[in-house]
Image 1 (cartoon, helix red, strand yellow):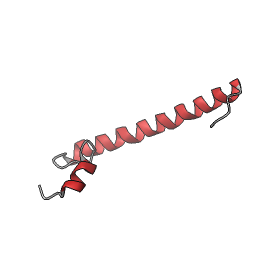
Image 2: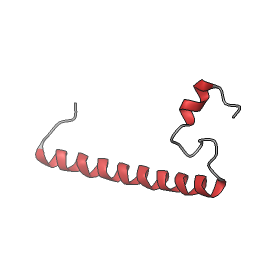
Image 3: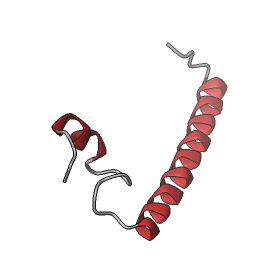
Image 4: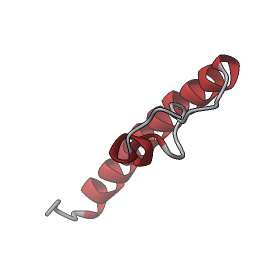
Amino acid sequence: MGYVCSNWWRCKGTAYEPGIDDQTKARLMDEIKKLKNENDNLKEIKYKLEEQLGILPF
């Protein structure tokens, strides 16, 4: 495949893994972006709830 072992494991299971076509790669990157946004929103909600309960961050 032309990838050095150390580079292969970094790409394994990501949108950059060898053999993934451009259409699938674009879909995966879009899903990753949406999930990161959802994660950020959930972290914000969690922070606000902890603040209401008086739980201080570590």
